[in-house]
Amino acid sequence: MFHHVKDLQFNARVSKPDPRFAALLLEQFGGENGELAAAMQYFTQAFAAKQPYPEKYDMLMDIATEEFSHLEIVGATIQMLLKGVNGELKDAADQSEIMEVMNGKAAKENIIHQALSNPQFGVLSAGGPRLTNSQGIPWCASYIHSNGDLTVDLRSNIASESRAKLVYEYLMQFTDDPYVKETLSFLMTREVAHFEMFQAALSTIEPNYPPGVLQADPRFTNQYFNLSQGESARGPWNEGEMPNTGKPWNYIEDPLAHVKETQGLQDREKGIEKEMKLTEKMNKELSKIKSAEITSAEPKGVAQWSSYNGIEDGEKKGKDNSKS
Image 1 (cartoon, rainbow, N blue to C red):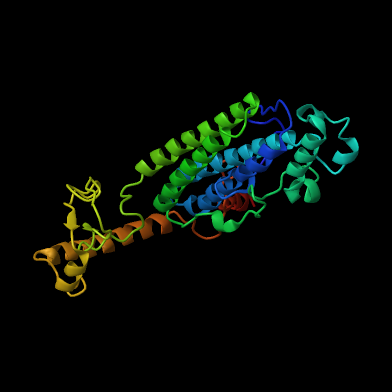
Image 2: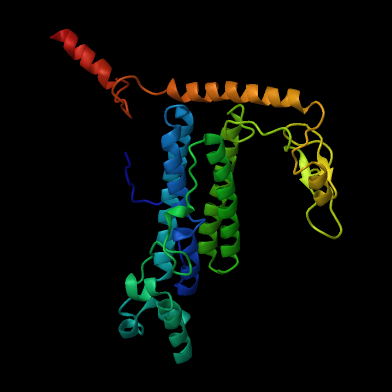
């Protein structure tokens, strides 16, 4: 149940109109890495988490709701940046506050062009934000990553928060308004906070590597193929031990020769059969565990999403029947 409070989470302020920056800020309103995308991603992910991970459902819904509040902050900021830019601009320009940022006819025509070059401001919305990115491309549900596996979803969220933070960093370089910068700094910082929340939540799910249920095929886990010509770089991604499994990296200097020698990677190393059998055993065991984790959390009989005052519908009906 959503309840809207009209006061913003953060008091967004703008010192003067700036239609140019308003157009850029649309990237965080209806863009791929914007607040709506984040809100809808966490909102949709929460449904699959409700039964097996009720505490993660609570977290996802809380953060999704906060992202909606950030969408409101971004929309309010865009609206304030467009003050005076609307369908009556040409008639009312001499009286509007936007005149404060214009000097002369050329500047006036330039700022009108800036506003109207984004049709959602000048033609479609009369000076209000629309669900598009900074280029006017409509928001799309394909921005959302919701895979039904919480370890995968949480990793997607960590990446989403990282990208959103970076966009705010870039946006801050395109405005000189100290109030707008303050708002962007707040929004950027909350991306970092959410990053920490998702990372902490992921650490409480064991096992969470590899993502999903099935283990990796041990024949192909640790190969690093040197597939680029020229000077090659070495580092912890291709030498020493792998960070999660502790297995040694197998650096394949000449991939073409290696593929031919192994008959297209079909020849098996000595001792690999035992590891493959262990992997198959782990796949079966983990499949049962993960399946039971979800099925055991599903309600018996009539499904009910919420309980009110801590009483399930079935319990309430039972009590009512006992009185009759």
